[in-house]
Amino acid sequence: MSLQIVGFILIFSFFMSHDYPLLFAAIFFTIFITYLIRHQTFISESLRGIYSIDIVTLRNYLHSIKNDWNYITPIDFYNKYYLTKKDYFLIDLRAEKEFKKMHIKGSHNIFWLNILDEKNLKILPKNKPIFLICYVGHTSSQVLTLLKFLGYNVTSIKYGYGLSPVQGVPVAGWLDYGLPTVSSK
Image 1 (spheres, rainbow, N blue to C red):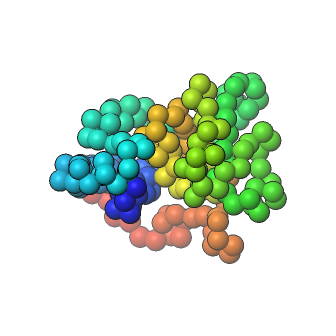
Image 2: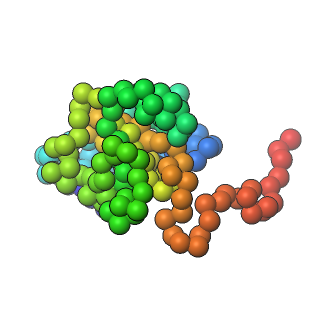
């Protein structure tokens, strides 16, 4: 996959992982769709025929996004799936070292950079929901988009474990720091 396509997917996922994604998504998709239309042949060639993404696939993906933006809160996942022992496949996308320190019982550790390795794709179920968890939800949002394009039934656990992947850097947003905002009339 070309670096430009991966970049577009990562930028899209970043914006979708925030609470106000509509403006960013509209801007992103205008740029992304324009790029795809102009480079459609290049995209197909860059994927080497393994997986193909075309404009129809992308449109279908957009129209398949549910009202929950493919997210579930940790509490909802815990109550609706974990406690009820429904059949699901949970992937912890963090590094193995972090996974070994603590993880959700029954989760499978697949480091996010290795998710598209053939051996990992072979173990992903097509017949049950897949849930993704990471540190704060950004990584799982990126992986979610990739797996959705490949046809998996996947949902991200919003805000992940709520842990910063960088020691000493708190998980906090603009308002948590008391930074200024303005109102519109």
